[in-house]
Image: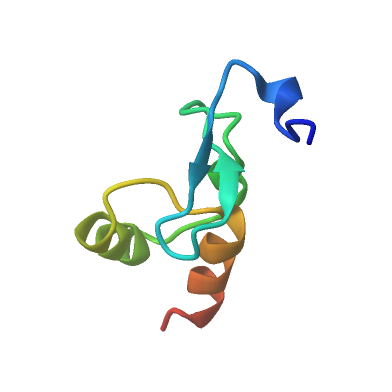
Length: 67
């Protein structure tokens, strides 16, 4: 099976800590997570509960469902 991330060969796929779905983290402002507007309160929550990246879908879901 072909690697669906071949165009991102510089970056390895990561598993989202929340849903385990693979995504690409570039660690730069071009990263998919920069597309999601996260409040300071949610950012603090994420920092306390997760050690690594979450995928864009999980971040969007958390933003949508945060108080």
